[in-house]
Image (cartoon, rainbow, N blue to C red; front, side, top):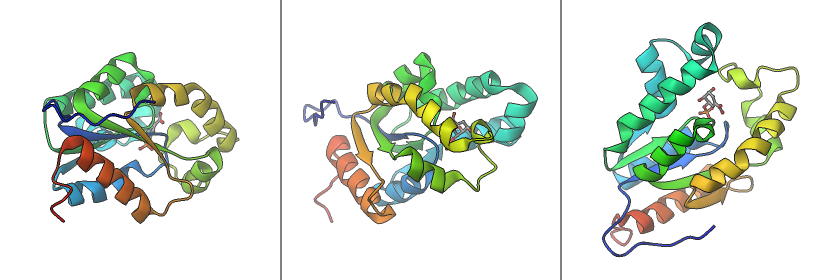
Length: 188
Ligand code: S3P
């Protein structure tokens, strides 16, 4: 993965966080948005607002494809904006259309974690329909096997959070974003 900082004036306008469920995109995104002075948006929350239903209800009543269509609509609504931190659902990279939109939207950071760390973080959650299976750890492994290459293809930078505290991850994300977005990293 090539990392380059563009100093030619064509800087990206938003910061986008991608990564599997349970990698901290929302928690980290909210804090980084505060540090950068950007607005925080979360595609899952936009979908819930658009549908007027929870994610498990959308999945059970209308199916995953209906959820994905709403997710694309939510992402598309952010692309023309600037100074946003956009936290995305873990499956957003599964649609080619979304992968193109992510790249268009701004600087993309992939938050990575091992299947075991992800499992520890999500095992009490009832809000992730794709992991309501008899063996969630295996489901995580199976989904990651398909998705890792997709995350990689969209990401400008990857940060592995297994051994980092939330503070450390926020620091890494904020510093990288300031550099890439040209957001006054030397102003203190
Ligand atoms: C999904 C991840 C979830 C949510 C939906 C589907 C996925 O978001 O969009 O349950 O396919 O990985 P988080 O990554 O915020 O949990």
